[in-house]
Each structure stands twice: as C-alpha cells, then as structure tokens.
Length: 341
Image (cartoon, rainbow, N blue to C red; front, top):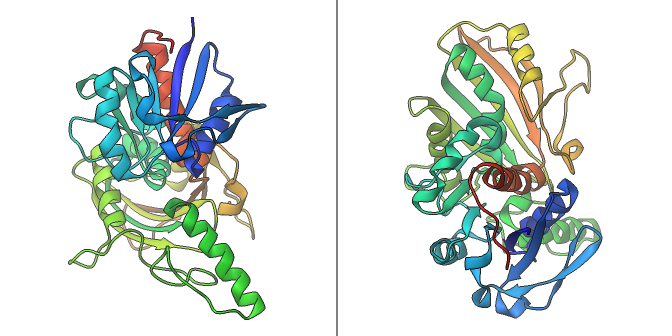
C-alpha cells in the first residue's frame, strides 16, 4: 500500500519544482498524481525519469488522496483548498491564501514543525512565503538565545516569485534592450530589465505593499507576535533566488562569534562568511540548492544589541517546493494513514 500525493498546479513553475523535489527525495511507497485545470488535462510533466499526464482537478477523487500539494495562485487556492480538504485530503498550500488564517498553521519546517499537528482544524497547512522562511530559519536559533525585539529588512526578490509571465518579461525586455527594440511592460509595474522595482505586491494607502504587510504578519505569527518589524521589498532582475539584508536587535547581548556558532549548527542553514572579497553567497549561487545561505554576519553599529547579516536561497526550490514536501513528510511520518487512489 502506498501514499497517494497529488500536485495541483503541476504545469506551473512551482508545481514542476515540487515534482522535481518529490522525485529527488525518493520517498518510499508514494504514488504521485499531477493535477491541473481542464485546459491542461493530458499535458505531460516530468517526474524524475518518468512522465506524468495531468488530470483534471475537477474530476479527481480527493477522498483517496492523502495529501494535496497546491502550487496555484491565491484565488485558485481559496476556491479549491476547502473543497479538497472537505473531501478528506490534507492540503499543503504554497500560496498566500491561508497564511493569515488563525485556524491554519503557518509552517517553516526548520522552525515550527511541531505546529503541523494543528492541521486537522481545517485540513489545511499553509507554507510560509520563501523570503519569510529563509529569514525565520536564520533568526529562530538567535531568537532562542537572545530574543529578537526588532528587525529591519530589505528583501531582494526574484521575478519568479511573480510567476512565469514576469520571468518571460525579464527575458524579453533584456533582449529588447540589447537589440534596440521598444521595451514593453505587462506583468510588472515598471521595467525590470537592468532596473529594480521597490514594489512587490499591491500598494496600500499607507505607502506599504501587500508583500511587506504579509511579511510582517507571517514573521510575527511564526516567530513572536511582539517583534517589531520594518520591511522594504524590492523586485530585482534575477530569475531565481531571493535575498534579505537584515538588521536585527536583541533583548540580550549576543556576540558575532556566538551568532555564527548558532547559525552554523542550525538545520537548513549554511554559513558562508569569511572576511575577504567575494566570501559571501549571491542568489545565482543558490539556484538548485536546498539550503538557506547566511553571509556577512557582523555587529550593527547603530544598535546596542544588534547584528546584521545577508541571506540568500532558491525561492522556488527551497522557498516553496522543499518546504511543502518537508511538511508532507512530517504529516506522513506522524499524523496520517495511507490512502490509495
């Protein structure tokens, strides 16, 4: 008897990465089903050395599917996740649809895997956004040691976080500039090629964006509801890989040496931090990697108990796909019984 796991949104960028991670993890006794909308029914997607044909999500029997990994936009997740959960399949959602729902656990596997046990309230688990997941993976061991009181964050987010159309737009704009064609914009609010855009998400009346507000709420929900947080989110002309420049203040003193020791030992992190040119990690170096990299850990001269650091990780592979699969692994190991489609 095997586990049946469905991947909804299998034709999309995140869905394909989830299939890649599932294949690479070589989980025992699982059957993977690729789901998409009716218009994509029959489309073939790669699963390791195999090929899966997408099935229509509207016709799938979720009562015989243990877990559904959702790699769809928030609107689609809000439509389908409750239906799937009611049918009996545990939904692990990578979108923003349920992250702020108090009845849905918001999970960063290296930080609060224990909270997965609350999934049964709605049969839904929310995967934290990739940028928040990497931030919390780095801050949790430091928070346990010295208690984080304030975070100032500037995030540098890849266009893949805005979907395939944004990735295509970066490519076509770059090519247009090189050949002297007109630069056209559709998916993003400003030209992204050879530029940066200080807007991720929709603008709010107070001058913040929906992404910045979400990062604040997610961080507080997982780490500490009392932490003070200031965020500026920037879209950068990078296809894959998010980074975060952090200035963190603590309630108790913590030395750079102690912080490095804790970060070096923390799960899911790799500390790459030498005092020499180029001895840090950039987004391009994280592509295809499962880890969150921490670099440039140093004392913050503007705060009595402050540290500064630089984080980078693959926002598709680690930030979405691996986190979702790790949650599924925890559910299978501790909370669910096998069901076969």
